[in-house]
Amino acid sequence: EPIISNHGLSEDGNYWSDTGVTEELSKQHRMISIDMRGHGRTVIEGEPYGYDADTMADDFDALADFLGIDKFHLLTHATGGMVGVRYAMTRSDRLISLLLTDTGSETQPKMPDQPDQEPTEEQRKVWSEWMVNSSIEDRMTATRANPGPFLFKMAEHPNNEGMWKIFEGFLRRQNRQNIVDFMLNFYNDPDPRVEGLRQIKCPTLVILGEFDIVFLKPSELMAKEIPDVRHVIIEGVGHMMAIEDPKRTTEELLDFLETVKETGKAIR
Image 1 (cartoon, rainbow, N blue to C red):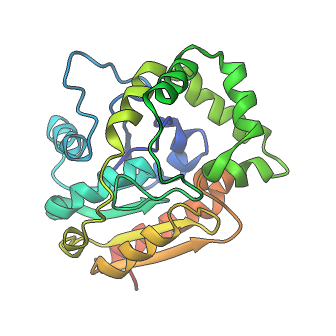
Image 2 (cartoon, one colour; image 1 turned 90 degrees about the vertical axis):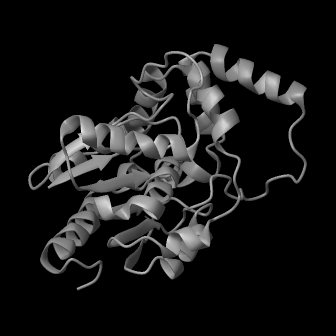
């Protein structure tokens, strides 16, 4: 059975392959990893760029149709999960299962300690210029010094040099102007779309790290509202689950996929 996978902000399909998850899943499934719009090796040609969840959800159908795939599993991470869950709200009949890792159903999640006021145009300009023009080395230094809510558990890991190498690879493969444009356009909808969650008919895995502080509550909401769901929290890890603990991540994904194959449900 085919698995189409996507990834989070500023990442690419290597989120799954560099961690060994793709290799393990490929032993039993056909793995098809995509780089989302504006990310990785994806080429942007002309406007509109389609940096919104609904347009990007259509990309799953376009890819599956192009490859002649009728039904598939959908494996997602973070921002990619926001797109994946939006797809499943109206097209879960095409999904064998939905795997949502470290994500939520709104595209404007509440960040911890986020100021109420929006950044000024001048602040946006300064940030955008730094994102586009700073060196990879400067960005890595800044990220290590201030890993924020998404990377802090990875930064705390005693053996994190290999993890940082994976993250640096994302930066080296991306077009930074595309990432800036994506960020300024995608994250704009705080509505978790509860009614849409209730319409998801396929078996669904909602899984995240214990210390993924941004998505703990959004994942609880999805687990509460999606009808056929398995909710898993992996102890000791944060937002970059597949990088921080690929072994346990892979074990949970495989167990869920095996359950779906045997029972057609999320839980045995």
